[in-house]
Image (cartoon, rainbow, N blue to C red; front, top):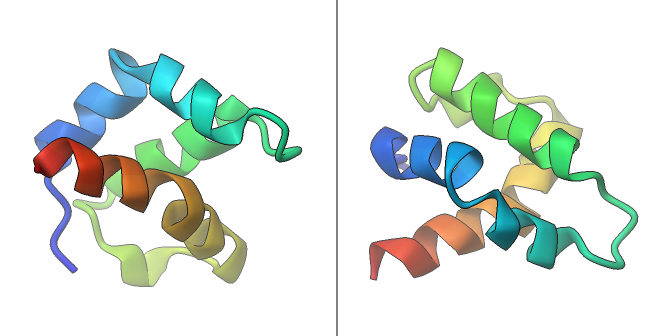
Length: 71
């Protein structure tokens, strides 16, 4: 999967309210999701470097938000 790094950067810096809405009531922290996004930015979007927990966080929160924003 190719991640639009510009879109990811925008999501975790300018549109954190969308992450807040997505994690509301799930027990996840916004900073956890932002941390996964930051890790991906630092590693050129290589999802193969994510741990299983990070990958689950990405799949559950970031991927749907990125897919929605790219439409």
